[in-house]
Image (cartoon, rainbow, N blue to C red; front, side, top):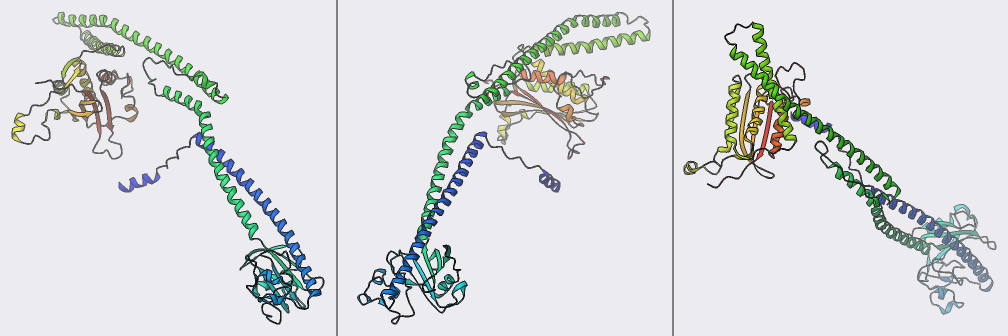
Amino acid sequence: MGGGAAVSRLRRAPRPPRPRSLRTRLVAGVLGLVLIMAAIMGALSTLTLRHTLMDRLDEQLVAASERAANRRHGADDDAGTNPQIVPGASATCAASEDPSSCPSLRTEEDDEDRPVPAGLDAPGQSTGTLSVIASGAGTSGGSSTSTFKAGYIDATGTYQTLSEAESSALLALKVTGEPVSVHISSLGDYRILVARDTVSGDTVVTGLSMEDDNRIVRTHLIIEGSIALLGALIVALAGRSMIRSSLAPLERVAQTAQRVASQPLARGEVSIEERVPDEDLASSEEVGQVGTALNTLLGHVDAALAARQRSETQVRQFVADASHELRTPLASIRGYTELIAREGADAALPEQATHALERVHSESVRMTALVEDLLLLARLDAGRELRHDEVDMVSVVVDTVADARAAGPDHVWELDLPVLDAPEGADGIEDLEDFEPEPPLVEGDEARLRQVLVNLLANARVHTPAGSRVRTTLSRRRGPDGEELVVTVADDGPGIDPSVRDRLFERFARADASRERRTGSTGLGMSIALAIVQSHGGTLTVSSRRAEDEGAEDEHGTTFTVALPAMPAPAS
């Protein structure tokens, strides 16, 4: 059993996700479009800004390369030595014409291991400018060079040298004369121009740092992202408000439909007064189309319900009139058959005539009972008031069970009255001796309540085989609207077919659908019981399990439950 339950749980179809509201979907759609447009515009503006900055940096790079070349050529003409600098020397000191005036300036003879490339100290060179000069044969295409000088100006304006590995990597670039972007591990991103000096034939590498441009691009991206998020928030709030106001008429149309759907339309006189107001119809073309269609539909449904009610009223009136008119001839038929049977008891009537009289009498009795049931239903449908007396349910239950035992001696009839038991707290002997049960009283028509139990017990007797056990219980419970008296009639019979159970309380509903009517049922017993119980403000329910149902081999049968509002106990 446990494995089967586990398999059934595994095979249970997953619950479909709850659909999102139209308002949420519209807001999400608008917000998504805004974010997509913001992303596209941000990407285009960033690419444009980066391209503009790159063009500007390339122009600056070409200018720096030209200044360095002019400085180199001028230095060769004007001075015999090239001023050199060690790490930490300032660019201002390096540009001085008198090397002796700056203690940090050195010549190649002073420090040949840390040479500053000629032209790096040219006037106008900005911080971050990089220069590498390789002299000698075979400097193209990354091949080894005989000597090279490499240095750059850091952010503080101080000359610094490049490592040999970084210098070799820069010299390995092809001599194209076009700016290219490279990444130097110790300096970051640089824009590099590799050219050959037309005078000396040396390979000259000039570079400018891209740090400032990259910082501008990053700042631009941050600002664009912040603006996009702020704009998305504003669009979400404003769009939600606009969409809510736009969808408000549609929501009111849906509320109108819900109010109509919540009305009891199955029976009784129903009039649908709900309509979509004109101001909502004029709010928009789409809402107007939906609201107009709904108003037209409600008008047709209202007319159909009114026609149905008129038809039902006519049928009920006809049944009531026909039943009332049939009572007199049926009473006459019964009277004459009884008179013939009584007056002609000594007469030697033929056997066929005697049998015919008995059949006429029995059928007239049966038809009289049917007419009385129809008249009772007609009165209940018309809402006629029943008697309102104090009814002791113990006497009603005891009498009806006794009558059922006499009518069905081949069944086992049991009676349980826990309503008369002492409360759970009365355990002492003195409490039990002094205990007096509260009278189980209801307000209603005693004859009709007896008819309910008679119908339920007769149903159990007729539709269960001989030897079946029928247990009737009267108890008290706390209901949603106060205390209730509950009568249950439970049998261990074969149970009720589900197709019959769904229409059990309908009129003329019978478990045996054939025309033979072997049980003699008219199909009105359960509908009459339900109508009587409802007229007393109670409920009548049924539960049933068949023997062939899974897991019901030992627990099968049918249980009818009648719940009636209990009257308060009278003051003693």
